[in-house]
Image (tube, rainbow, N blue to C red; front, top):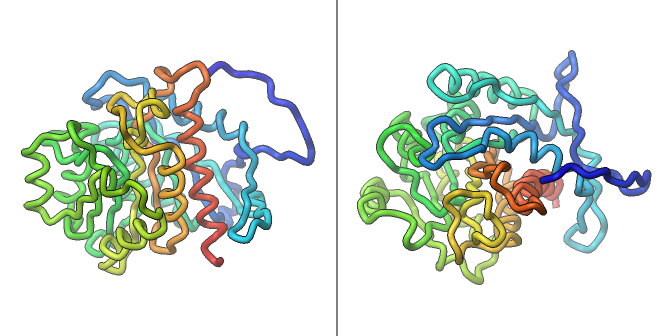
Length: 307
């Protein structure tokens, strides 16, 4: 996405530009953290460039939305702290750094949003967010893929989290696509007891209803829930910078509605937005802009929690 000068209007503030943590590490509503994992991706990717691109894209949007009754809600009233990027988050040492950074950020925030990077970032982000609550934690994925592959890659985060101790009966996968997974991994999901909601089963359903059902399962242990937002669940026309996105996926508005619905629930403590390769986006930056809007949808969900 080519940088352009943006007009200044004191009555039209811009999102982004959020401060770094202050010395007193006071409370925040949302902590932002870049996790530019990319070295184990199954597809060549420039996903390490995405956190910076998302920060730039955020400034194209206003921190305001229409509330349920049409009354404007000013998200600028919420405190957002930008914790920068994890250095070299790939590999065992990088994942350990990520877990430490996530836990430290969440110690002073209601919700953390990790911007990837590829889907391997989900492992360290979720484990860092869950901490000692792994035995009761839950996971909801918005993803075209099961992510149950063998090995260590962006195709294996769900399997790795289960092997780390996550109860697979508290994993809900929304948006699993036809022709994007093998029968063997679909059987693995079934054998593990993972709740799978295929893409076609989401069509026409209310996002709030979908998320209430998903969180009833993922949150059944009483612990924190992590939301994995793999943008390749969307149609390739709106997510061309996702290497594995396919024609026929979710519309951009559907993904945004699902993210906002999830973020409205107190059990959701952490979110990752992954699988966007900013270096492969269209000139209008549509995929990066969608990822940035997902960050703002989490903020919107926080603002609506009391409503």
